[in-house]
Each structure stands twice: as C-alpha cells, then as structure tokens.
Amino acid sequence: MNNAKEHRNNRFGDSTKKRNQFQGGSAAGGKKLLLIFLVVAAAAIAVTTGFYLLQGSQSDEATPSGSPVLEERSYIGEFVSMTAVEAIIAGEWLTIPLAAVDEHGIVYFEAENDEGLQVPLMAYVGPSGRIFAGSSMCEPCGGRTFSLAGETLVCDTCRTTYTIEEHEFISGSPVCGQYPPVNMDPIVEEGLIKIPLENILSWRIRAL
Image (cartoon, rainbow, N blue to C red; front, side, top):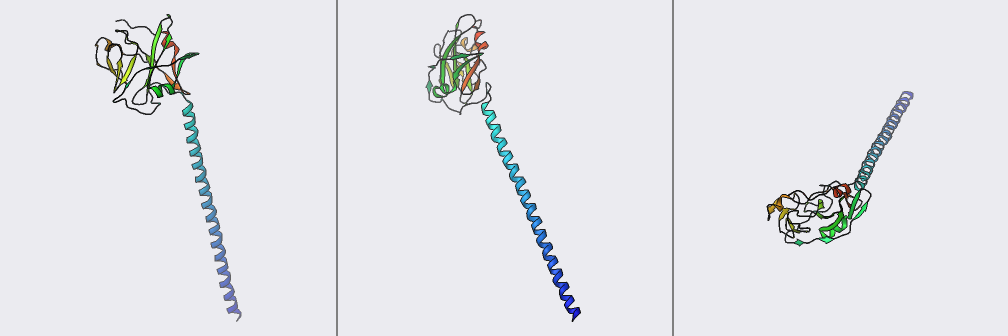
C-alpha cells in the first residue's frame, strides 16, 4: 500500500513539475515574442519618422537649375504669350514668384545690368516641369518677347523657333538661331525663382 501510494505521489509530482515547466516555458516564449514585436515596432516608427524628417528637410532646400519643380505639362495645340510680372531684388538675388510662372506658363520682367542697360528677362516652365529663367532677347533681330507654341519657344519678332527645354535651333533665321536665350542658373527656394544678381549685372549682347 505504501509503495502504491508513493508511486501515485511520484506520478503526481512529475506531472506537476512538467506542467510548471511548460507554463514557465510558455511565459518565457511569450515575453520573447513581445520583446521582438516591440523592437520591430520601434524600428518601423524610427524609419517612418526619419523618412518624413528627410522629406521635410528636402522641401526647405533650394532646387537647382535643371531639376523639375512643377508638374509635367504639354503646350501642344496652345500658343502662350508672355505675362509681365514685377521682379524684386533682395541681396544677391533677383526673385519672382514661382506661382506666377506656374499660372501663366511664361513671364517677362526686366532688371538693369552694371552698364545701366535694361536687360529683358523671362522665366517659363517646360514640359518636364523644369524652370528656365534667363535672358529674353533674340539678339540679332532685337526681339524682346517670346511665346510657347506646341513644343517650341518662338521669338515674337522674327518667328525663329527653338526647342523648349534645350534651346536648340529648329527653324527661322539661321543667324538668330545661333543666339538662343541665355540660362542664368536660377534656383527655386521657398516659393521663389531666384536668379543670381551677378548673372544679370554681367549680361551683355553677344558680338554678332
């Protein structure tokens, strides 16, 4: 009887021990899974926060000339004439609102060079969304305004045409075609198109 009772007690003790071990293992496994989940969640939050911080910092930075800053667009079937806007000189920059170019497509403005000559200037958005800002003179014929027509930039005086983005001569006066508008290396920052003032002050009509 005593042996039987001891045997039952031993079996009960073994079962209790195994149950405790199982429960302890389950608790440890649960804690481990919870820890892994917390680590993964923290990493995801860190990556997301870093992404948005990076995006915010990039939006405050100046966009250099040649980089798209507006949505792509097409001028096929359109003839867009210049709209006059007022430019502002602030320190070492001449500025115009980016929104004005976005709205009108192509704008005209002027500023003096260091010889007192009024330099005709323009800015427009190309089909790629890139901004051009620079001289607005067809130097051989003296034309001071241009239009956007289809895929071309057109001198309003002699009708010489260039590609909008690269200013490659297409048709019209071969002489005028050798003197396309001069890019003055603008940047776009805080909603403004900014042209280095020194590029305007040093502008000259090129020798013909």
